[in-house]
Image (cartoon, rainbow, N blue to C red):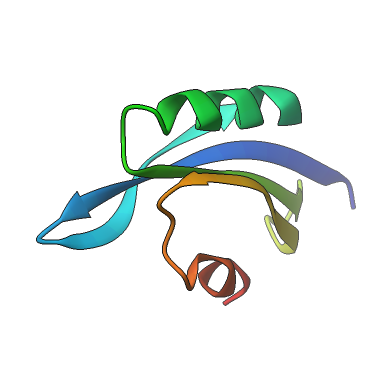
Length: 83
């Protein structure tokens, strides 16, 4: 069982006056994800940098962590990740 770490940048957009998830991008490093999320949040309502640790063979999630949030992010975003 090998644990693989993936860093993501999740964008948030406004559709019908509601904040919803937009595109999700993979970043090679944690610092890269944070920098990308911060830069993107200047152009769109909000972003979050996320670390996902999962079993490389089965895909089973080990943990999901929010590294940083920028701009507008849904109040229940952290709960949704754990769900």
